[in-house]
Image (cartoon, rainbow, N blue to C red):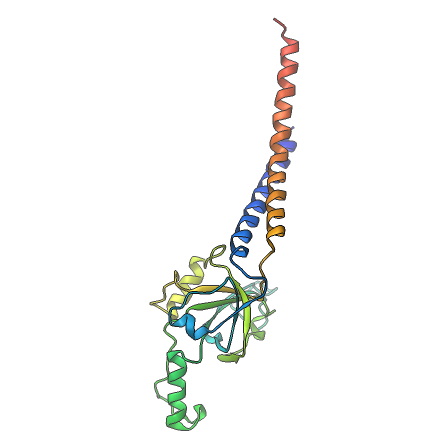
Length: 236
């Protein structure tokens, strides 16, 4: 009997989590198009609202040197991050070509001819803010992550602010480099993720509810059976 209760509780927890996952996915998917909607990062930086949860960002710069990396320890158990450390997720700020940082870079190039000719001690621009944080799992190890800044023509993903937020550890690490960042205004975009269809998300919700209710129905049925037996054993 005790084992049956434990199993029932586990099934209820799984069902509840599954139903909640379906609700969150439906909430995001209901505001997302089937195909990614093109958006210019510069427009988002200027305050334009995100047009859709499923977006295709045009020309942008990935600031890998400002990334937050969630990694696992190597097999030897040593805690420091190494090139061989497995990567779970990486959160990378994206900036447009019109961002103040890129304007500063172009100014250095105009002054010195190229970035390689910038003298030591020169003041380099600093990324002080951004509006998109790209969450990605495309890198297997820390050594696979590019260095510095990389420019890409486009990237697509799903805005997941409604179903996921940064943890306090990630926020603390990012604030070390961006003390004035407003996390309420930063869009978290999961790289390559697509919205679930309404039918699939509703199916997940229904399936989760069914799993949750099965142990409840069985438990109530056993209580009813036990009451009948008790009544028969003690007739008035």
